[in-house]
Amino acid sequence: MKLSDYALSRSSFSSDDLLSSWHWLVGNDAEVIVVTRAGDCFLKKSDGIYFLCLAENRFEKACDTIDNLNGLLSDRDFVSSHFAPQSVDDFLAAGHSLDPTSVIGFKIPPFLGGSFDIENLESTDASVHFSILGQLAFKIKDLPDGTPIGDVTIS
Image (cartoon, rainbow, N blue to C red; front, top):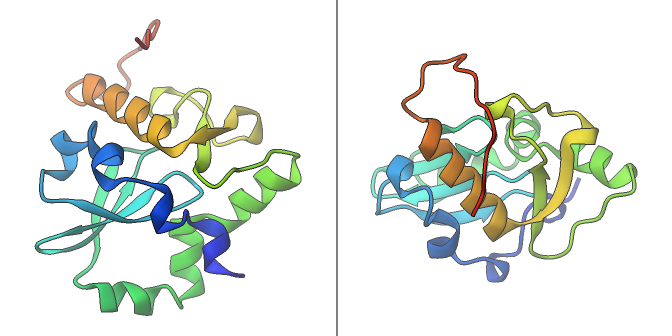
């Protein structure tokens, strides 16, 4: 497994662009340092390295330093759970493709009741993926779990 197959090139994204819809959750001092092909990212903040799982609106500390993260990147279990290489491989094997700025996105996000099944996945530009999911997550952040969501309009 080559880790670079499961992450975007650093030159293919702008941290400010990707986080513009997520400052409400990650704060203003966050900088994206890795974007996974599975559509998530690692962020550097003043107090450590964090993982933002967009599908689940989960923001958690991964480790303290870049050196710690580099060490974790040699751990197969860590890579499997944070980069989802099997999901990326399955997506590509199903005939989908990912261009240099694309990640695996969702037709219906899991936090709105969508599944992780291949039928609900699509290739999405990373900036669009981060923007739409950030806006949707912000809109529902104060709703109790299980609240029915009706129509969603994206403008």
